[in-house]
Length: 122
Image (cartoon, helix red, strand yellow):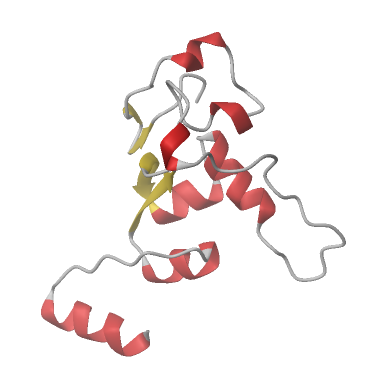
């Protein structure tokens, strides 16, 4: 990973990493895009998104991350829907603790400071 990052910086290039490790993402990325069920739900500066997430899914990811010395895990409730049965509107709504009737309409990625967030309640 270090070699890749050194080459990218030396060349002034960009690279896209697909990661499931939030800690690694904060170390290697300047910007992140968090996806749920194939859609971007939050994007912005890596440190901001991962330290103070605005989308409920990003919040759930951060809360469910394994921390050294933690006594309990905090998984996100429910399961990802199959691609053949995606819910109308916000794809995260069936699992979201903040979901309301408005979530039956798909939210657009909307500016929230330096970020874009796809949530009616963010």
